[in-house]
Every structure is written in C-alpha cells, then in structure tokens.
Amino acid sequence: MFTEYKEVDKVEVVTQYNLIQVRTATIVQKDGKEIARSFHRHLVQPGQDLSGEDPKVVAIANAVHTPEIIAAFAEKRAADLAAIGLAEGV
Image (cartoon, rainbow, N blue to C red; front, side):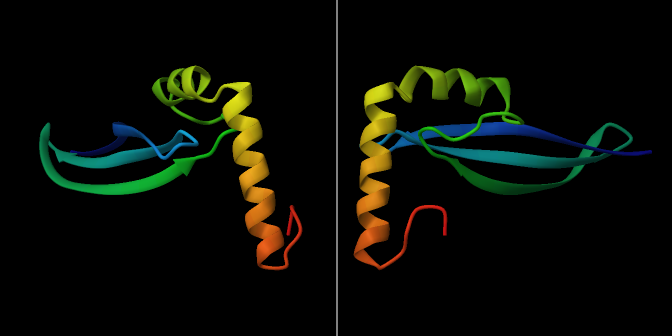
C-alpha cells in the first residue's frame, strides 16, 4: 500500500528582514518503507498572512516578525517597487 505525506523539515531565518525560508518534504512510502522524497521551498515575508502555514513556521514568524521588522520590510519593498516603476499591489 502506498502512502504520501508532507512535513516541514527545514526552517531558516535569513536577511536583515527576517525572511523565513521553509522547506517541505513530500514523502512516499510503500508498505511503511520510504521509496521517494521530494522537496518544495517557499518564503514567508514579514507581514504576510500566516493562515495555512505549519504551526512551527507560525511560531517562528510571530517571534521574529516584530512590528519594527514588518515596517522596515514594507518600506524596503515600496522603495524597490518604486525604483523599477511599479506600485504596491501590482
């Protein structure tokens, strides 16, 4: 019998804005023995909606995404978008 499940297997906090890199493993087992594993990565930014995130990721985000970090990241993002001629939300 085949089973497949996903688990967050690595979480890293990077850059001065405390971006959170999340690696999720998709594991396939046959009769209880692992036969395949693949990985997917995504990024969690300060101020981002955390619904649907693994509880470990939410706990880390709540600890490192302070109001000051969220404001600094929003300011940096707005400046970067303005520099390339885009407005927020485009």
